[in-house]
Image (cartoon, rainbow, N blue to C red; front, side, top):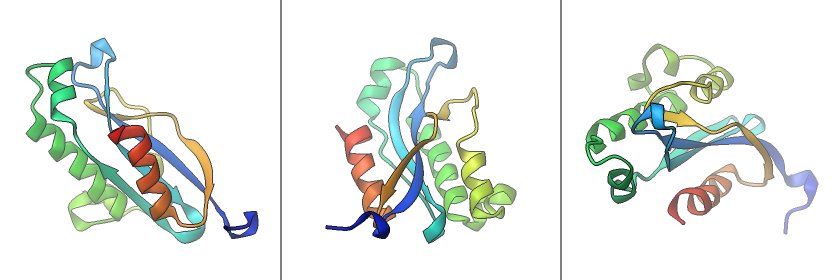
Length: 131
């Protein structure tokens, strides 16, 4: 068991797919987690195509997965993340979690403490997306 001193503050947001923005219905598709102390910024996504089709039969899952991959590239600072992917880690997290009215959106940012941000990210993904 880890003591509180071993734990680092992190912030996370749920990544949502909103196929018809005007209806404000969404499917949780991923989680992005930022831990400044460990210079960690990653996201995991799993697009449930059946749930997506239930919300919007004409949703283009291929296009949505491309949007999610773009988020992933930016989070990782990958060259395919373009100019935003070249920003510092805190700026990339703030850009990714900014309020937007597009098909891929994020929840409000929530705090937490963890010893291992990669483990926390997988746990949140399982709880908030895969369940």
